[in-house]
Length: 284
Length: 242
Image 1 (spheres, chains in turn brown, red):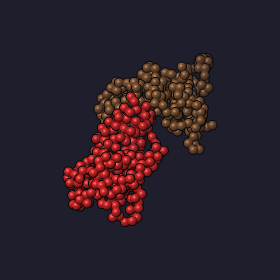
Image 2 (cartoon, helix red, strand yellow):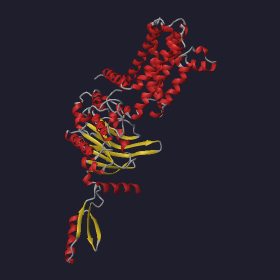
Image 3 (cartoon, helix red, strand yellow):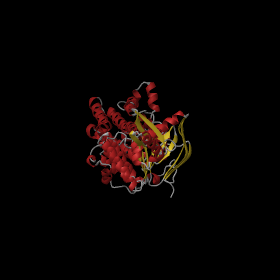
Image 4 (cartoon, rainbow over the protein chains, first blue to last red):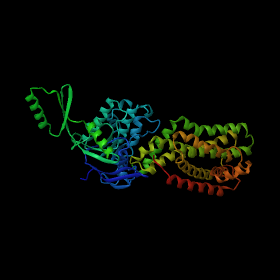
């Protein structure tokens, strides 16, 4: 089976500005893939090319084996889209909006069940204008899922959510994964990528600066930090091989008859790796 | 669901949205009728003036329900991102726009029918002499002004600017096109402008269908038709979903 998404040497320029400068990645079927990066990194441009909203300047793009630049109704039926900011029809309720959008799909999900899936059942008869920011985002999600898509694009789906709403949304994404759906997620929130994505790519200035499973990102940079307090000061070592380092440190300490006060072995969080990588890319 | 069935669903949905929007219902239906009744009652006591006013207000109704309403609503839907959302679904563009524009077209036909009915029942103006011609001219006016409304929405920068842009066209055009009085009484310079624009010709055509006697239907249809073609070209050529 072909990958759900294949992107090869994708480029996009707006006039003289190059927003995307040769991105390549693949997303397997059933995979949750995260695109991480600061504002203006080219994430949304990339996703909107995959969604068919923008034309690429160069490169190859395949979405479910189809070129998204060629609009095709059957293709749209297999894809669900949560855009970054996107309004609703005025003066309709949540239920009416979901039921209306369901009609465009050949095999839609049950509207009531979809509303419940995103946790909006109590708001089903509320007009969209009266929803909070987080509730509107959940309706975005319901509308993206109503067609029972194979592939779901989520462009910063939890921006503006309170912590409880984020947990609900994360639950929905995990549920999508259980159902075998492919998810392409962009996010600012590193914990979100860490919690949801099987693999992430960190994008900076239109290029991927790192790619891999969240817990294995940043290979090549020191991955473990060992620190302890000596003479009232915290001493820190970085290593790829903490076993050897710890052995040496504890052996020396024992030989001196000291204790390693406040000994800690930590792995850098995705956030630290992200900051390190995006800072490096900036220095280049 | 076929594209045709989807267009029908969209049309029904648009009808529901329309009736939930009191200000749209007011500007589309009540305001032209209110103006008709006020002016007819206050000024147009003789039949000759009524025979100018009835086709004039009918033409204004077509302009308000199609050009103004579509330019305004399309700008709002684009600015709010509703068009972009629709674009991300399998809904065919043609089906969506057919439902959306069809709803405005229905408003135009209902408005013309109301104006004609009020003219007859309240003011004793004769029923249209050529009902078929009335339907044809209303239809041609709908195509022309709907296309121009869609095209004009491309020129409106955002939602906040929409009322100013649409009224900047609507108000001058109705005053020079012979809605409330015969355009023949206008100063020459304004008459030239009115002659070049489609509303006066639509009103001439409606007048021919309702009152008859001017023999100007073919020329009027040609001008409205030419604007319709230009409007369709611009509407399609510059359409933006976001």
